[in-house]
Image 1 (cartoon, rainbow, N blue to C red):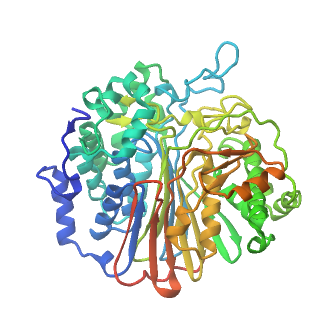
Image 2: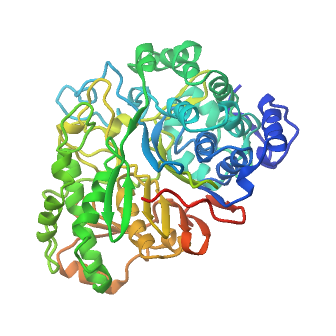
Image 3: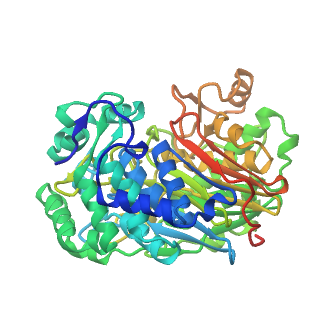
Length: 579
């Protein structure tokens, strides 16, 4: 049975009398294995306190940062179903301390093999509203289960049965519903109600559960248990795969068992740039984040940011964002299937030419300005540092809140709607207002372009690990967070500061409430900028700062969300390999 609701109670990880088999295994690990994580400092920060606690438990059970990343990812799939899950994907940026090896684990979804460039167009060649957002036709082939098994096998030291145990407990025993869950469920109530399996799982009793009610997901617990016991094969082949395909096809989707069988994680070399003494490590394609961050930082390298007045500084950052996002729209896509001129886009000479086009007194008009932008409330991020200096920044998603709103009956797996991240038609925006070209057009087996941007910034005396959700605004948020972090700002200040954003189209600056003064806003308008004042804040940054000079590790969870960070241990981790 799925989605049962119980009266308010303590969270499952805090106690309870349930007797899930893997709880005994987890307790055994906590009591009997050596606890190297308690001897020196380690840190976990995520968008949900129960996911943070899952990572801490696995570190305390003898796991490393990569084991903890598996635990946190899986726990978020349970307690933040509106943001990520087994039916979605993500990017995991890893740093291995013993040799300095860094890699991006690409668990991004792929288009089904039956997908085509015009699959969401009507007989008149226009995009069919909602077809790429609601229902199983909107779902790409999930990558998260494969990524978790890959990370555990190649980088972790604990079996999946241990790393997935907290998530299984949370799914089977339940977790207390919070205000964010209720807000997201209200936002996506219509598609959730339209699918009986999704309604049973997320609207038990036919209603959005009350705050504090305990939400259980027995089918999801069974699927997680199967993965814990048999690895990724349990999801991509056999009974679970057959149920996924049958459910999708019965409701108009185009998945096949071959789609699942052929899915593979890809290890990619991160995008690296140097800025003011820091080595900034970002996500590679199909994430646009690392490329755009590299372009923007290189454009900014010769500008005296500290000497600029507030209007000049914001204007400059907006113009840098505008140019990078324009290149995103023109050039970027899945480089496994299309040619992307990376050498050109990342060349210092090109960035310098773009920077020289910036006029500090006048805004540069973008071509066209009628594109609508979604609110960017999806996705999730976490950051981890273990006592050895291994670290992880991971951004995960099912795209729009609660993804497609479709659950494959009997699996508990909520499917993504990442197909909307493709360019459905050249010049037509997706749910977040991003336009694209043929480089990001739908094609069989292709990975859709993403804005997810897990990032490291490294210097001999300071390490910053960060990322955030926020749709098209992710990259601009990470840029602002990086600039604050590289200037030495405390972690709590970095995640709390007001934000602004420009993405080329629509041609306007979007500003959080209170982020910029009236004087600055007026100054920007005099230079030709259009201002959109947002009614609500956005983003949910999760940050770790490791100041090696004073042996201090700090975490900060964005005050806009409900997340939490934990630092434990008395001494800093071993000094990492030089960046």
